[in-house]
Length: 422
Figure 1 (cartoon, rainbow, N blue to C red):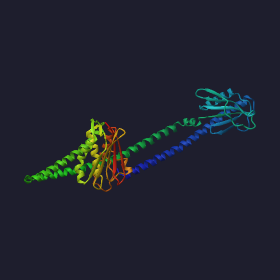
Figure 2 (spheres, rainbow, N blue to C red):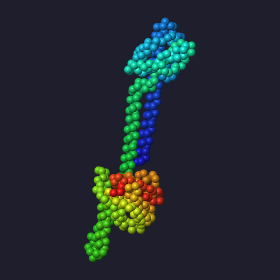
Figure 3 (cartoon, one colour):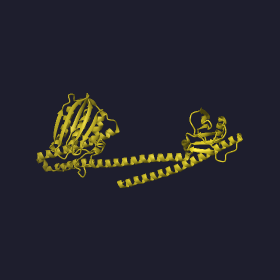
């Protein structure tokens, strides 16, 4: 699928999800307001009935005005121009609330305007039917009245949302859909990136294999000439070419198989006491021919008093071979490589510095990913699979070491390895 097509699909999907979310939020808010209005009406009706019963009990005429006022979203006051019995008030409140399916906990207080004090206060847990008396708190004075009581619902918001079961369920389903969509989008983009990387890997591998195979085929054609036996130097030269190209193919296949085996299982190290100075010398022999072809130079500063570590010799040699091979390949001028070793805080520190094309800060975050290769623009003369640095990082980590990279574009790179001394 083309990149523009995927981008269009993602944009349309995001816009669709955003539209659904906005619609859901709007209707949820509308439903919440509707439930809140219904709750206020139920509470007002219940409080009005409580007030009417008090007026009947005290043989007092009901006031012309509505005795109920809502001072805030969850606080109501009721004027009763007579003394109020707390037990009777609590009983009437619970009875009227239960009739209207108001099962929320509430607080109530009785206020004496004449003496300007709260004479009683209590918290009622409707589920447990337990009241806790309290004399703390101050209610506002109601002018020209003797007594009134106030009722407050401390958990009004949660009460209303509990009544919105269908809306809460639909919102939860929408949240799951959004999470699933985000995860699916992440997987799609990751798979697309992986597909591109694998495609590049196959192209690189095809090129890497095609060149030696073509060279071997041409050399074999020349050797089929019966007259070549009369030219032993030429015969030996073509035989050497076949051998060298065969070795090159073998190394490439081994590298791919090695990375595949590291994927399938944990790295198994055959540890032993090894001398890093000897390992570096061995790795340098492996790249000597490539270095000579590029007219390169290597400076070595072996300053480590203790160059020994406990590690797998084969893997450690491959680590330095990969670093040196990259230092030779990724430069536009004759390679200049510096290798330094020293000891610090019980660790062996090795630095491999080159004068290559360097790596930008953005690319440095990804160079250790498998198959990843630093883009070289329209220049495709640097061969490889993008496996080298990933392998180096895996091996150093398996040895409980640390790998750091310092690099700037057109200023070369320095790889710093920190391994535990034996």
